[in-house]
Image (spheres, rainbow, N blue to C red):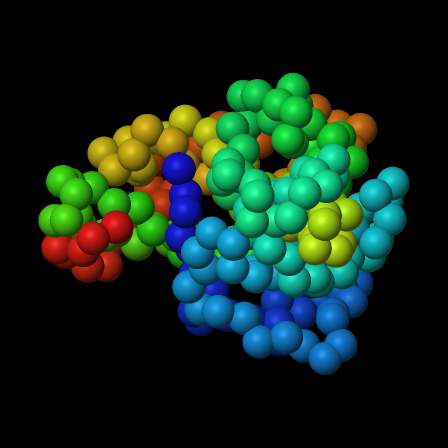
Length: 217
């Protein structure tokens, strides 16, 4: 379960440079919105999504959406939604009612430079920061959706999780699906089978370091 991540060291300009190196055109919001360095559930978060779902790597756009997916069929006020949908299990994402349409039609990349996990007893938890060993920032496999709620149209997202790999197993039984840059196109390709992308990387892929001790989360 990943319910907090960060974009502390990188932002729109850094992302633009890296997309340029990959020769993927990237369109930005205008004006560029300010983003939180630490992102919690229901906060606004940056995502990258294809301009044309049929040609995902020919052009992308950056957007800012709510982190806690509200499915397209939700018509009530946002506050009436009592279930949290910040994470989607990769094993069932294609069949779960809240996610299956977004999985079939609206995949995205969610940039981050780290995420957090906690261990220990309530009130005395230790916070761990997890980063990628081989890249300064990375992308989670994500889904986005648009719902015409009673409060108006809301765009939102969720990130996929999978079983913990060797780097995460001591801290949690689950971890986010982190995509290698070479796999961005495969995840966004709606006609491809993404199952192989859900496998955690080998030992040493992720770096875990102490962030704080004795916290409440």
